[in-house]
Image (cartoon, rainbow, N blue to C red; front, side, top):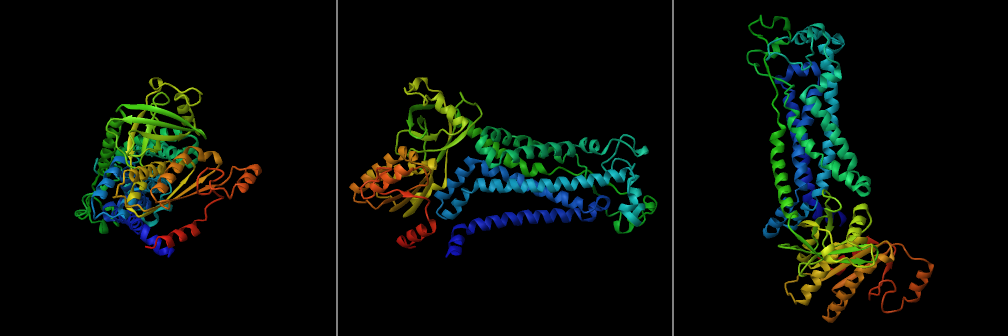
Amino acid sequence: MALAGMLINDFLLYILGFLWLVANAGYFTQVFLTYESDTYFYIRFLIGPGLSIAKACGAVLNLNSMLILLPVCRNLISFFRGSCETNHLCRRSVRRQLDKNLTFHKTVAYTICVLSITHTVAHFFNFRILYDHFRNVNQDQQYGNQIALANKLRENVYPAEGWINPVRGDNPDLGGGLPLIEQGVIQIAGWSGVVLCLVLILMFSSATEFIRRSYFETFWITHHLFVFYFAMILVHGAGGIIRSQINLVAHDISVCKDIPNQWGVDPRCPDPVFKDGSPASWKWCVAPIFLYILERCIRFFRSTQAVVLSKVVKHPSKVLELQMKKKGFKSLPGQYIFLKCPSISRVQWHPFTLTSCPEEDHFSVHIRTVGDWTCELAKVMGANKDASVDTDNLPTVAVDGPFGTASIDIFKYQAAICVGAGIGVTPFASILKSIWLKSVNNESVLKLKKVYFFWICPDTNAFEWFSEMLDAIEKHMAEQGRADFLQYNIYLTRGWNNKQAKNIYLQEEEETDAITGLQQKTHYGRPQWDTIFQTIGQENPG
């Protein structure tokens, strides 16, 4: 059953993942075989298999660099989500994959890092070999009985179309020139590669969970170094230092490689002619870069639209509620917005789930003050004072969104399971409000017949701001004769002492819960999901 359920839920995900792997493997193989062909025989003879490996990794890097921007184009994701919703042939299993956008973004990022390491290491050894070849070092050990061909290629003081070794130096007659590192850095591919490596190191190291949670601003700033990443990707291949041979018909490699001293003399073996490699990265990256620029323009335009802070509410447990209004703002239950407060930072945008529902005349977010930015926001909103701040004196805020999440599909099912932890309950505040108001308005189109709501809280204070709404929904559904519509299960994982435990025990027989004051009792500890899912499955066959 578990395997069958996994296939039903994630079969399309596995198919898409497999296609992505096939695309990577196929393109890697194609480019690898291209550089194993006669067109690159002489440069491959000098370097070895490291050339084909490096170039194949670079090609797959281009493919993944194209893909990595698309999952973070939120308006593009929202557009496809809307197209899927209006297209009856587009199943929910297809829409669900759009909710994996950040997972795919991270997967592609890991792939880029692995490919970059392989590409860089391979080219480091390649350039070391070319440098030694230019300086006539370790020739016998490297080329053995083909030393004559190696010497011929090293004597490449040909016209512009004849050189093959990019290591040139200032005085090739002396076998000298610049040192190895400087020879590499002066090339376009060299210095742009160094910048790419530094940018990737900064972006990857600052994207770890610890940095994201503890030093979000550091993560935000370094992640925007992707601008330099793409700039360097576009110029990295402009030097064209890996050259291909263009006179293979006249210069028969199968014959000429064995008689290098007869080149230019034997009519079968004219001097080889090479041309610069052409950059290919722009072919892959221009379209996603254009889409991302369009995405940013749309988000910038929306962020400049005026937002009115209509109310600031201080809730227990350091929770701050902001109620706002914005012309033309339309949302669905469970969606989220990005919020910026210019008086704190002009560059920082933070995502928050909407806790209001479309039926209300405003939109709101509940923010728990746990970090530097949220604490500063509470301060400028006057939440750290006893007296409320007049709305005319509140700072301005900018809003970008709303953007969709998986939870907006809840109304397309007959039974739904909602699971939230701590402040992560906020999307279900919007959903439950919307269910409540739809039932008040007697909307017969409401397909939803049963909601199982699970809320796992770390301490007793976390209940305070949300339990009032649960109580109101519970009473309303009971009045409508639908008391079994909402079955909520609140789990308290810690935060009680011996005195509280005794009080809970003594009030066990009371009609209302000792902690929340609600009709349904609080559970203590963590949910046993296997048992819960089995029970719900039995209650809702099919």
